[in-house]
Length: 455
Image: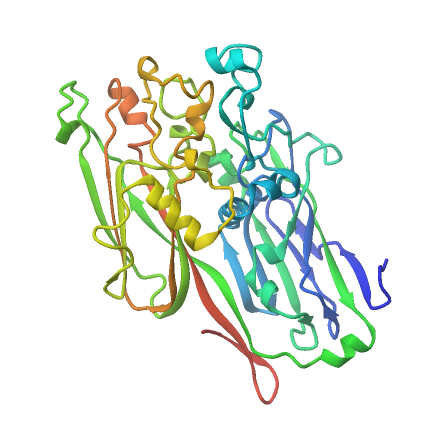
């Protein structure tokens, strides 16, 4: 099939596919392909408990890593692809997510403002009181559900250039240079999913099986292809590299005294991050990801655990403060960012001017975990959406990192009783995940071949 005399469209089946494990494609040698690689038919089937995909990552939630190889030489890769693909949805405009992006990913990232009915807004009652439509600010209520058979389960599409920056910076893929060009997808194992079902959705996933994906690519033909074949120039691009630190659980005093220093104890942390040493870093993203799924699953409305994005949350904390030092230099003035809107502004400045991060989704929820002191201003599931997109972003400006230090602190959150305090989303253990844009280069050699190196 072709839509131009100079371009031919291929739909490639994987040369290797093992459900829930791995899929691999190889491009034919001595050809020129555009970098518009599109992964299609992404999804899962389930034996029972059908539900929507993850509201954040959608169908991408099953993908653990994506890599491009030339033979055994890694050109670029993305680990924890489900997390990064989820984050990328927030960097799109709300309009894009509402009309296009959510259909690609099968997620519910876009937001709609308003309530279905004024009586529901006032009372939180009615047929739709327990679903998204009954709150003032809500996510899209479209349905992207799994099913028992592949024909009827929802399947999405991924534009790989949005995830792998190499494809955005290569003018074309020349398989006379990259003679064994391979695209490799690795999935989360069934063990991963059984331990953390929220990669895919909030509910129990029962038995999950990935659908067989296929790859759509464009081959350039004729004189245009012949003119550029074998003439690859140096390519500079970004890879997303990662490091992780531990934020232990904090234990407020639950004896009932509510003395400030014991009811809301300070938890200061200093992290020395070595994963980016001797690498040129442009932007960083700090993601505060919950460790224990039991503390963030939907349950009753009164336990402080009903949090909207599950494992894709980046949670805000009481009394949170952060400062980043690069090579001994503070990124922000004075003691750093100590207000929710400061963190939101820093993240938007660094990562996007038009993204879908919402002001209501950062900062501390005004509602406490106990029912009696809940605010009536946000009805039904409102507490799920507050404070769950509290990412920290920074642009350090292509600096070669020799020393990276993160100073972080939060306070414990005293709830109604000991059980609720221990389960509170504000007190439990979190992973501090650091994603960084690291510069790499592909440099052709004079005698043929190329080197892949850090820039």
